[in-house]
Length: 159
Image (cartoon, rainbow, N blue to C red; front, top):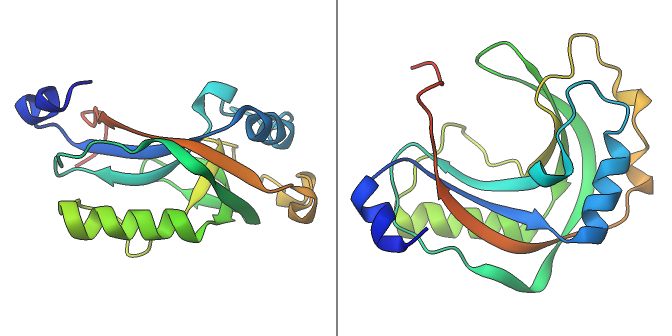
């Protein structure tokens, strides 16, 4: 999308990072037995989910790629009642980039703390056993190689 199109539309903004192919292979192993698992094409880490439009050009290819290390699994309870299964990660470069965008572009963020994570399932159901997943110690370092931005369609979100 062209930058001037973002200016004209003035819609909420999303900024995220995508993984390289080898990392996506590793992530696919993690969620292969999970209900409502995210597909390989959906694997990403959100940097910004701003309901306030911001005018930013994504960095594109990240050189060198950003290292992401697994911390622990969590279940985030959504506003609409789903149980979102995530792998929280240690990624200081992503935290720094999130903070940079918040400060320099005036983005909004609905949560008190930025917790970099990748979503394994947008609804894993109730009573999901985190111990059924591979140990985080066995997850190799993952690499993000691309930053991208897009408009958000948030009409479906509750007010």
